[in-house]
Length: 79
Image 1 (tube, rainbow, N blue to C red):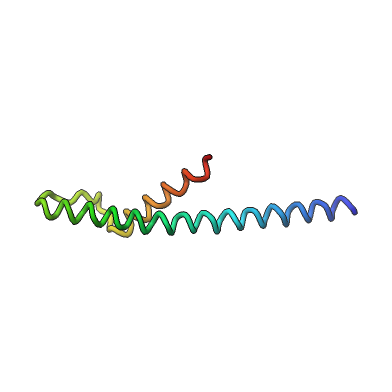
Image 2: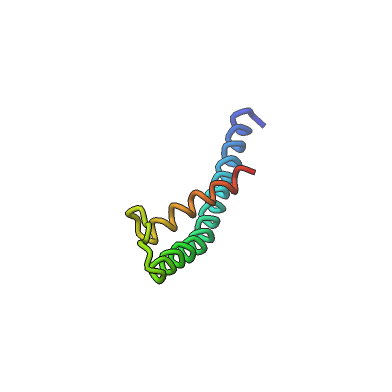
């Protein structure tokens, strides 16, 4: 086997691992988004029911949940 063929196979293996990592990250974000969306919605609902102003920092519930999901999913890859 030549060195070029070995390097090509190593690149293909690395590409496959990176694709799997992207899929895993997206899955983690999707799961975290559902949880974060429920929590952000509940937080705003309870604040509105108590008569307190909703602290949304100018973001929609979707944007807040998406940002939280990406922040949360990133920590999974640290370990």
